[in-house]
Image (cartoon, rainbow, N blue to C red; front, side, top):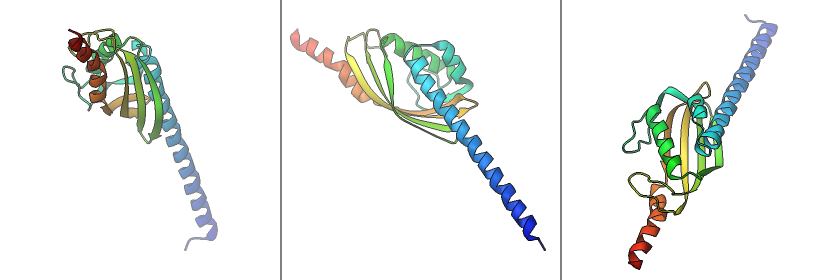
Length: 170
């Protein structure tokens, strides 16, 4: 039979192991949330492609596929450059962020002025304010997979208002 001392020691060992495992996971979650904040602040807001390289894994997979861009790291880099070129004053604000396990969920607002061509649409000079929801799976502080929803309909409506009023004036 097991002695009370042995049962107590086993229980204590399991409690310490659980606490250490939980704090390790929480540390990873904080690291992943910090990487997501850095993504928006340095890559999206400033166009820092060095930070891009540090934050995106070489085996990155994009699940929110944008027509004309491959669903990999190179495609994401091309898209970021094109979006920042079209909206050079882009500012992304994190409205809410939650990290759980290896995933980070983020609700954000994108604001900017279209001053360059984007997805075949000439610069409109119009401002956008669009909401997005991103889920990123992280490994070692780098994004390896992304799923997201970007309110393209609202963005196109905001950009198209200028075109509609231009045609009405002619």
